[in-house]
Length: 98
Image (cartoon, rainbow, N blue to C red; front, side):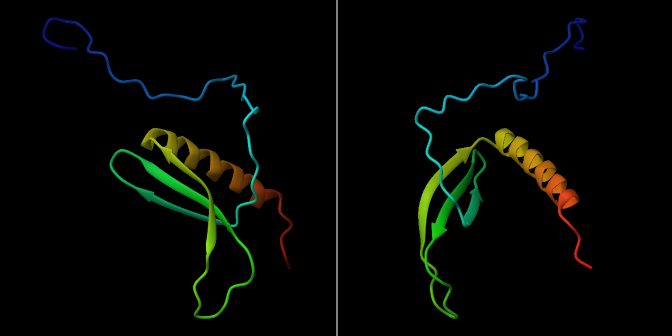
């Protein structure tokens, strides 16, 4: 509270809506085998791509950039938390090798 007794508004963290309906009319699906990321102060950029052919020792791998997504840092944090949960669930369901 400030000296006048009023509460200062604190910025609220954005949360994902409980019910989200995706408009899939312009959707494209890709099988991505390559993903890279970079970040600046204002955004996190994720590149998704695919490569054809085989890796050659010592050679350059050429990938086709299929999609580049720029996220605000808060959206990237939500994505990180979602991916961590999904991968933990995946690891728990996967049969363990003996």
